[in-house]
Image (cartoon, rainbow, N blue to C red):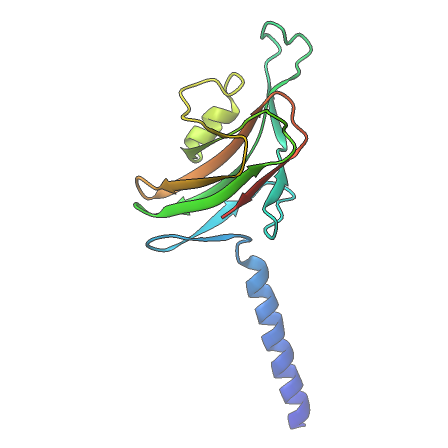
Length: 165
């Protein structure tokens, strides 16, 4: 009888462990004050290699030279919470973009992210940084809040981008 109680206890403990780990965020970045966790990662993000495809596109059918609604930018993003003064660092690397640069920007989410997603091909007063080779992102949160790290490539892009926090 005690053997079956032991098995039941172990099974319950295993079930609780699986449930807790399945709810816990995919990627964790150590910050200066607390832990920052990504609330959203791009679809197909591999947290072991940091690889992901840019899965969203913005088009402008009325843009001169874009009569067929071809993508003017391809992008994807990570959403995370941060405390004031918290540091986000990570290694970024373009996949096979050739000489085409990959850009990134960190914006307040969801307001600025929504403005970006509904912008005219990403046009606006965005402070983009670019990389064409392996680089480091180092960013300090100006205040507590929710942010989005957006990766952008001009035009259509079906390659891989790497981001390892």
